[in-house]
Image 1 (cartoon, one colour):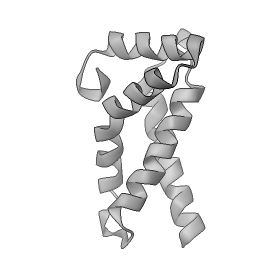
Image 2 (spheres, helix red, strand yellow):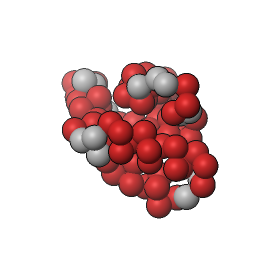
Image 3 (tube, helix red, strand yellow):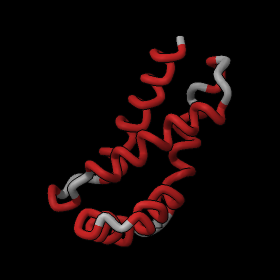
Image 4 (cartoon, one colour):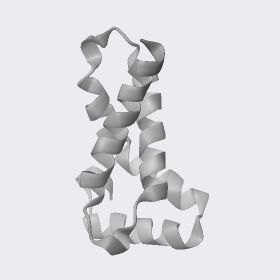
Length: 97
């Protein structure tokens, strides 16, 4: 599942979360996509900000994306989530710059 796993399972989990709002499903999606958050945060490693803070901001973006994503629209979750995560990291810089 997640970025390195089965896209069908991710889509099914996103559909299940959208229907049930089950926090355990959301938590599983976060865990499955945490490596993506870390990779995106690494782009900003020379910013001088602690990676832990950037990962926290990126994870908030991931959670927001999970809540907003509609799998019925047929879009790729990764295509949707990347700009949301990067946007949340940039918001962190704006708020702490």
